[in-house]
Length: 228
Image (cartoon, rainbow, N blue to C red; front, side, top):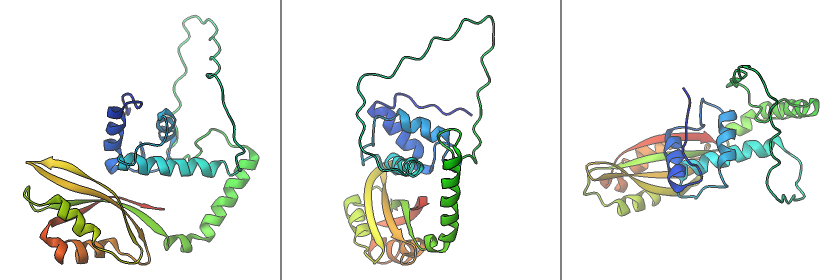
């Protein structure tokens, strides 16, 4: 099924894309594809930090693109507009070619690789496999929904109770309030955790839905969980 976004140059368009990415790590499928590259190139630049889901996705795709070009930049200035596309030769009732469907397993975001690029990719893959154990003890980015007991719950105090939970390896990030109906709002908040030091399930069960914070918090749901 085709995916469509309206006017990514407007605030409304960016907000719609941010909401679309609330429960998704990528534009389509479960890994980066040309759909992500197409949307990335349609954006004028890095989105506002207030757009939590879009900012998370934009940073991740930027990292993938930068890893595909390991050389150090010297700085390039581009002047004028893009070169006009050449006019298509006249044809007589020739049907257009069928669009190519990218393979979801293909992580090449920029077309066919050269032999040097394939060699570099193989070397990177070997390094990744060799350091897999080390990466398992890295960091994770977590997006979480925190739901109050009712519409009378003080959401300012609720967020303060959440951020009051401090421990080694835990860093709270941006947050926003999202209406869920009947005058009730939920707190959507980002956090970065060191996997060896912080258990997200333990954080929720022992510090958020139990203890002082439980006065304000009814439940917590993990919306997105990504390794960094």
